[in-house]
Length: 343
Image (cartoon, rainbow, N blue to C red; front, side):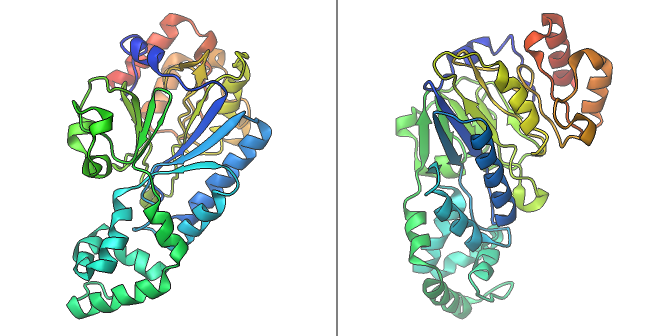
């Protein structure tokens, strides 16, 4: 789904962040400590090269299950919170641990969601389909092996994070219900009612929960869960920035194109003049891992024929297409957006 810059003009103009703020939003991790560690290093490097008055790293939830290293993921997060301002949101998978410890039969449900992998990461050896007696034994073993700091971390998770005109939440919100009245069940589990809604919400929603092949950008929300446990991609990381002191943001455009060469299929959101920039069809489009020739500067707009660009996108070519449309003519922007949307 491609964002039409004309039909979404009002939505884009309304979305703002406080001045001088930068947010790095990370999707569902699901036990992939290797991917998380690599991404955190990239964020640290970006903060070093391009300092921000107040960088915040927001984690959308689902840190455990499915992947092989849930325990290591929590260890990384606990250590990282001492280095930067962080917001940890609660995912639906984080609800299983305490439920299992108090009610072992929950494992019948949890194992279908990747819970056995989490138990293995804590040194347990569950069978594929544990019976009642084994479930009780596993619950006792987990209670002894899981660090208290991990349990406290899981207890401390937030259900949502409001910042400016953005709402960060794990699964989504129920349409028609004010944000302050949303139920925890919906914030952690909702899918179709939220995903199919095309109406404007109170805030622009950044969420995960439902795996997508690449970042799914709509006029009222963006999904950054790219199924890391299965795809090896964490994450189509979103970056929201606001200008500092009204400074010109021309350097941000080049910077995002450069970062896109390091993270697969990365879509960056940028605030230009305090307003939400065009997503995936405006300021910056960074899709894929760059080849050596195009790694730094991306591809010049004037050197890419419109049809060639469209064919490469259509055929799924994953070389970088970092396009600064800031200086592009209106008919060129409309052409790319309309062709991609029709496809």
